[in-house]
Amino acid sequence: MTHRPTSEFLTVMVERGYLADCTDMQALDQALTQGPVTAYIGYDATAASLHVGHLLNIMMLRWFQKTGNRPITLMGGGTTKVGDPSFRSEERPLLDAAAIQSNIDGMQQVFARYLDYGADGAVMLNNAEWLDDLNYLDFLRDIGRHFSVNRMLSFESVRSRLDREQSLSFLEFNYMILQAYDFLELYRRHGCRLQMGGSDQWGNIVNGIDLTRRVVDGAVWGLTSPLLTTSDGRKMGKSAGGAVWLNGAMLSPYEFWQFWRNTTDADVGRFLKLYTELPVAECDRLGALSGSGINDAKVILANEVTALLHGPDAAASAQATARAVFEQGGAGGDLEIVTLPRAEAADGISVAQMLVRTGIAPSGKEAKRLIAEGGLRLDNDPVTDPQRMLDADLIGDGIKVSVGKKKHRMLLLA
Image 1 (spheres, rainbow, N blue to C red):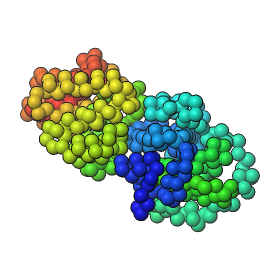
Image 2 (tube, rainbow, N blue to C red):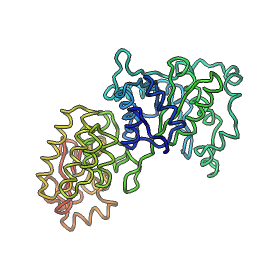
Image 3 (cartoon, helix red, strand yellow):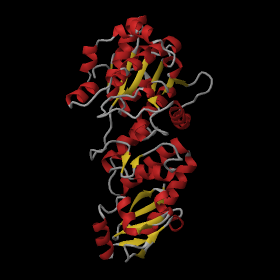
Image 4 (cartoon, rainbow, N blue to C red):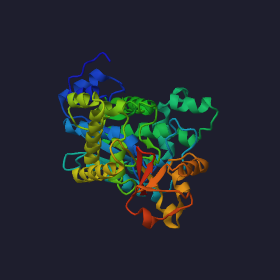
């Protein structure tokens, strides 16, 4: 990066590690210093909740608004009917209109925690507003003629699929044209001049910029964030139990807090800068701690991130619960959260099955070996029978599972 930003927003993006690439950083920086800019990020409604993988870009929108600009959260009510093929090995399942709207309703709950949608504030839109009523022939003539199939085939997200000789349907191939059209419509309707997204969306973003410039000669830009992996190579937002959802009904604030508390030491400083609003210098200081100090920094990380999403009371409650369980486990205990679907415990589940289903033991054989060797306790009581049954009433609000002397998990029903 050769240009040193002067605008507050881009300065934050660079200092805190949000920036992967920008189509014209100098021009965007100048526009941001001259007055408010409108930017958007699109979210297809493929699930009932956003997950931690979306949180980095939500934080970008939050900083965008905090630095005096206007963010748009664009719900993909139209594009979800097609499905983004980017870096996927197969076509997404097609959802009907009712399922898409239900997912949008669930996703919208999160944005209000991070953005102000009051007068002259953030705007929430749905691209079905303009995509559902498109005339196909007019769209082909007026928009489709601006796209080169040769160039579209060169994008990495498409090429990687074709190189593996995996099918790419004509329906999916249209996705990048529709997303580009979103940018044009947002420019026309709302004066939107910046699209942001993950670096896997670079090709789609560039398409939208090119289309807008060709049709209306608008000055627009694109900015991407890095695709994060943890220091041990795992995709950010994944845990042993699956996706880390942002809706409290799908993942409790306590489990969300624990996800951040269990951050790898090497990731603490970086995550503090990306997912909290603590000053950069303080994030660096906390991330450089070691021993018990880095564990204290993880608690700060978990509290700050949970407070932003679920509120300070939920963060304080999660910390208090975690402390109680940790103290029950004894000094040096290593607290983790494991979950079991409530339906699996409804008719009872054996201790051995529970160990396998929650990932504590890799197989039933290993679970039985662990129990036979006296290595398992439930709420500090030794377990000797692998067929001992657990049910929803017994698990209740949580039961402590101890493996050996220092490994302690809290078993919860999801």
